[in-house]
Amino acid sequence: PCHAEAHNIWSQSKHSGAYQALQEVNKSFDPECLACHTVGFGQPGGFISEIDTPNLKNVQCEVCHGPRWEHSRNPEGGFAQEARKACGRCHVKKHSPKFDFSRYWPRIRH
Image 1: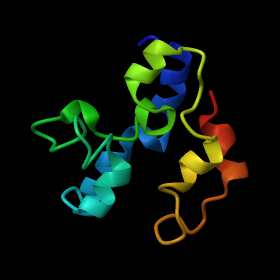
Image 2 (image 1 turned 135 degrees about the horizontal axis):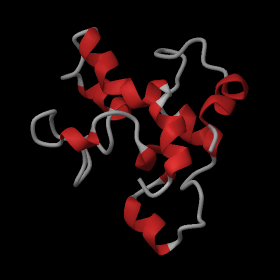
Image 3 (image 1 turned 120 degrees about the horizontal axis):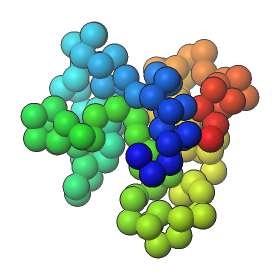
Image 4 (image 1 turned 60 degrees about the vertical axis):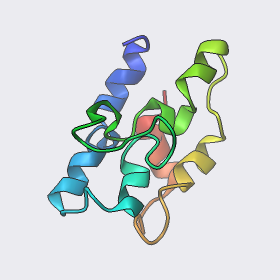
């Protein structure tokens, strides 16, 4: 990968196995779950199914950093949105009641 250090951090995080977590609880077909456990579900060019778009499973770079084409135009641009806001899109009380940004952010920061 282009960003080897960031990829290494990601590959050791729960984000890299987000889709498998859905499979373990038989939720891999639930649209509400797929919206946060895949890349771009419900959007043009986004995740469709494990068979059609297996490369878009899990929480990947684009979920937090925005579309790949934007990064290509501005490689130093960082996040498409502020990190706390990006995390808060999926880590809501209903699904992540113990989520604490200040505690979890250091685990995935890159």
